Length: 155
Image 1 (cartoon, rainbow, N blue to C red):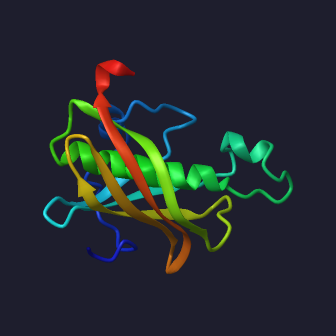
Image 2 (cartoon, rainbow, N blue to C red):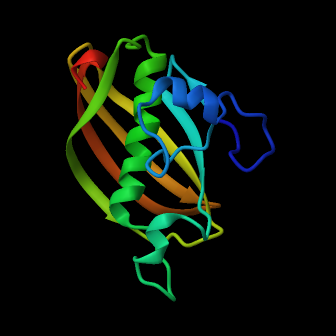
């Protein structure tokens, strides 16, 4: 995939993402999608971390750090967009398992997260993705996430 720091127009904006994911504020954690490569099963999205995020009020006030579970959720949502674009648009990915999660650096207000996700296995029943969140050239978090696919009407 190309350099995520270059100024590239988004492939998807927030309105496009809201048509795919059921999440809404404050739990929609993907602001835009910069790149999708369906053949390589890869996607790159962006989350702008701002000081007015509601979780910063209670998560270490005075020294705000984005909660790790929300970083993993941002990776999962990016994976959900990839799954949708790969043709599973009548289904929704539901998280089953997280493995090999490693938190490498804190994420604070003002950071721009580049969420890189690679589909390792995706089928009509579910699958597994590998994701990493980068801040410029620094790794913030990495993990593998497994999911089941269920019909959207079951939610």
